[in-house]
Length: 276
Image 1 (spheres, rainbow, N blue to C red):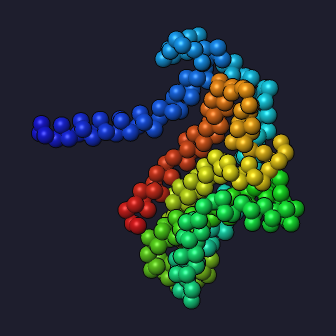
Image 2 (cartoon, rainbow, N blue to C red):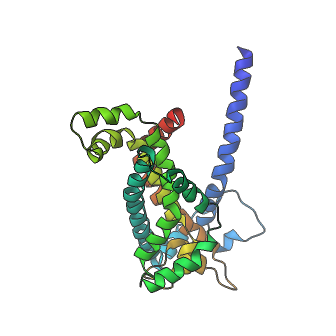
């Protein structure tokens, strides 16, 4: 009995340490964002802002271009998720259920694509986007994100489709469903949690992407928030308060998304962990 309590205490201690390690940068950024600029870089260290102020939040929202930057990020993320969910679901379903020549090579190709550094894709994508007239556009940025994230989505969703017994689909087809009908009516409801989990993962990755946004956008009409925050750093000026306020504001949509899909996402991940 006592040994069990000690083991439980050790587990809680380790979990608390990991939680503190993961949350500390965010808490620290929140602390800095609530300080006046003169209180951020000072010899007198204080754990909490005294007095706290929302000056940095008001300044970055009203004086900078952050609302437009976040809107550009939201549009690019939305189209990236839509394309990945539509194309990736069909592709992963086909790779999971269909037996055709070269199937393993296709999966291996998607895996190999993720092994190369992302920077190798920038120049070819830049040339393609320029030739297609999509350079410095939000749609072009979404297509670039899709090229980066679609292989990951396909691999993740294939695992969820593999976990569904083939007999369920065969029974639906015996009852008169077409292959797509069986997929829509029987398979997709069963992998709905996994689909939410993959879509959220893709959405967060697109929302925070920086390198493609830096290289493929040049104007404020398509520039995303990570690039916009980076451009606030001047040669002789580093506005810590405004930067941390922008960072905190940028994670609010992600938190809201998690709050909406939390249950479905956890259920989907749990199903994948058990059945996969």
